[in-house]
Length: 624
Ligand SMILES: [Zn+2]
Image (cartoon, rainbow, N blue to C red):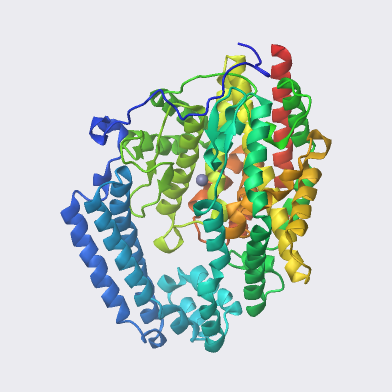
């Protein structure tokens, strides 16, 4: 094996061709299919429950107007809503999981839609509740909760409803805002149309003479696998040319998004668009500001990594399109049967109880492992209250697939612990916490693999995987958050929003992060134009970074200090998972020892990256 810099290996552009035929579901071993009979024995039982769901919805509608009757009435409504919720999850997931295992099945699809129709009915039938409750003074409801312990269980949910009310307008105001709903989505829809339906990518010619019709997938594949820099450069040029051709239209659409956000923030009397975005989860804006500042001050290990890559890949200049290609050629397959024990083993720092719960996922068939004809792509962990989570995979023996499994099982364990310790009303958790257990499971698994890998190439691959993950899930997301914040500030401060203004912000950030470690291409400045999150979910991506930082600090606490300090850290972490959504995410994380208003969590990521890059430098020095 060589370090494979500008090697002569051909570009691998086509998808995995080693399994040309996708098997039918019937050919897959039962052991590797999830067991949905834990939900219902058959469709007849499902149907009976679906009917009960419909009857409960009708019963709930009859409670309209009853709340002022006192604590018992309120409690009855809360309890019935919980019952409906539990049943809704169960009937929904039975149909939806059945559907995802073969999406060509029209009969199952019809059943899935039956649930959706009932869910819409439930939404409508319960819409009276919030305004009716909020018409009762909070002081009165507090007295009720003090007098009725069963009702007191709902304290956090009820208090939060009143808190959210602070920015709700009177009936006339809400009606006006509701009229705006329909054109609120116009810039986002236009972006989707322009960047997907109407987009025309060119065909490019690679150095081998091969013609490749470009698409986003192809573009990523070339950047991730093609070892000829000239080919990556060509793909990059052609890809960005497409966005450049419409750059003023993209700017106008994004301007629409910014003005929409500012309109709603002002209408609801928030000081800034950031305040408005963070109010729902009660996150202080200083969290985002601190995240951005501390990350910007911690970019040196990121630059070191790119300098190392440039050297190892033997490049004279190093561009943004050179950041993905693997440093070494290493093609190990990870069979599903092998990795299960490793994943359970890697969770040892969290204790035997956690490990045995994790093992149940494999032993009791929570997981649908392999691809089959018609199966949904990707991976997820589905929470079903009152049962156990189900995990969908399309496992293909690659290292990425193993990490996906570890990741999804992190979500599953969060579900298991939250569901077994929380009533339904608090069983769910926000995205602000959700990616902590998943990334923590991945981090534990990576440490475990690194400690055991005897092959130096495998260690390099694992280290690169870990570093690329930090770059993609943390640094890039913070850069994105910084861009979104600066762009929104343009409209908040009444400044013009043009393609040039947006490109200037983006280019400035690229330089602030990468310094002299990158050779800059003019086209990089317009990257903002093609990032769907900016148009679809403003102020969302920062949460990946805050979760990542929380995980980095937890990993630090789990690994350092005295034996008893480590045990405390484990206890605090498991308490976080068991807490579900019973409090605001900041409060839950603080109890786990993480304060995202402070620098420590972000510093923990920077330190982790520093140590990974040092390890990688050492491994590579040994090899050369
Ligand atoms: Zn996840």
